[in-house]
Length: 141
Image 1 (cartoon, rainbow, N blue to C red):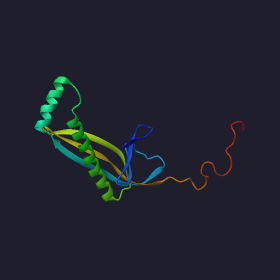
Image 2 (tube, one colour):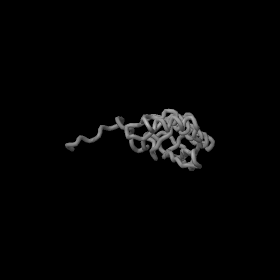
Image 3 (cartoon, one colour):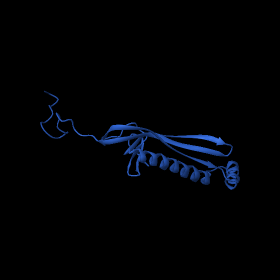
Image 4 (cartoon, rainbow, N blue to C red):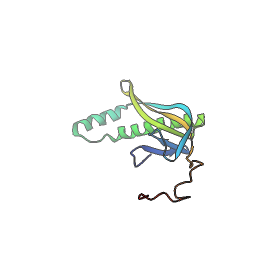
């Protein structure tokens, strides 16, 4: 994933753009295809729990859990994007993540967004693209 200058997380996965924003700079939405989602449920592991308890005493990152959550997030995102691809989308906008406890020791991570068809923006027919045609009026006119 790539963080844009505006702070939105954007990226290209499965050959098309994904963004936390509701718009995609330089593109216009031509068709909304609906909500897409992907989820993954992971359970804790007794070995990780022992390490976590130890880390809780001495402090520090629990890298096994960090890795597990990152893998879960990527799996949920991949499933969401596969669903978008199956709908004929070429972008997913408004992507969000949500977590919930399914049962003690297991959590679900849900990725969701809006599958859309986008196309590059073009200049309006009655207006030449910036830098072409007549010069803009100077500020003193």
